[in-house]
Amino acid sequence: MAKKILQIIETAYRATVEEQDDTAVWLTHAMVGAGAQAAVLLRGNAVNYLVPGQESPPVVIGAWRQTHPPALLEDIVKLSEKGVPLFYVSEDLEDRGLDGQQMAASATPVRRNELAAFLSDYDHVWHW
Image (cartoon, rainbow, N blue to C red; front, side, top):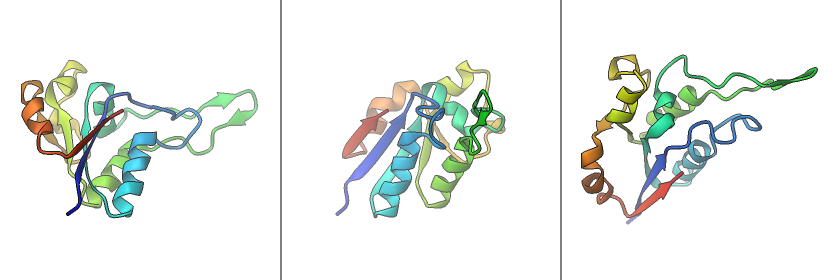
């Protein structure tokens, strides 16, 4: 039986200046594609990944322009379409003046005081 893996993504926009995606989100796509049973919990600034208009803009250095800026909301939606359960810490969304009505991706809220019990459902927890 496959082990259940929870990816906690807290550091938002990790490596998105030099790459087209968030490393942890990309890794989750790859793991699920290889048959892993994974879920994602967004917390801290990474809750922005669920909301339209929170993108990382393309980088311009002199005459060079990054032609493929990250599309993190799209990457998160694709995870959901693959059947990956998405969760977020509800207080982290509220702390940023956002609410569940603004989210473009379907995700389930988890309250901070429920995190310990929530984490116990997983065999492996990776915190990014």
